[in-house]
Length: 259
Image (cartoon, rainbow, N blue to C red):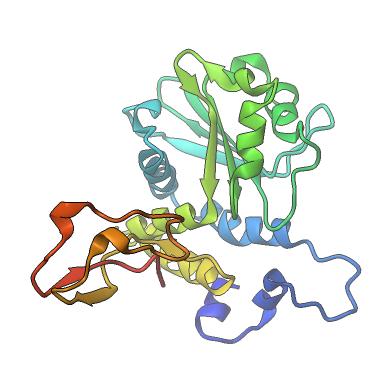
């Protein structure tokens, strides 16, 4: 799928944008995207797989949560089932000193959670208490509001272990940021990251990249106290007297999204 899409040999991806042929009773978008993005990781060596997740944790500000040593092997199970609870994936890294790091993964694609307690059931009913001590729960979706609701619910404190909040909320745009960082490697992860990033771009996931590239020329007479930025800031009141009477210059912004 990833290679066919790169070479424009398929239009199958259109189903993830809402296209339907009228013949299928059900399109399993989330499962297919899970398999395409994370299933292909199963064919990479342990160091490459760990680097992807280490980069994700770093961009989420959680680098300290990972062991300092490298894992010796890993195992990933898709749609495992325990106590009638089925997360999308369960990843385990194993270390030479018999320690392990578990990552429980729930993925959404334009669909709500299966009940407001879906995430808490995964954490409490699928996982045993001993596994939870060294586990992180990663929720990935186009936007993470459903995960925020779970954090703020009566069950939200169940993810708190010590000083850590073990429920990590990640948007698909942030996954593309991780893939972008992985492209600089010299191993198989770089090629996988390139193909996977292109796949996500094709199905509508854009990277947020700040304000560097859009260029605006400001005349001398502009009074920024009276500017408002429609669509970006509601009721923006300007930059104050210090910003008036600026010489003619170029302000460098960057577009919200980078292809």
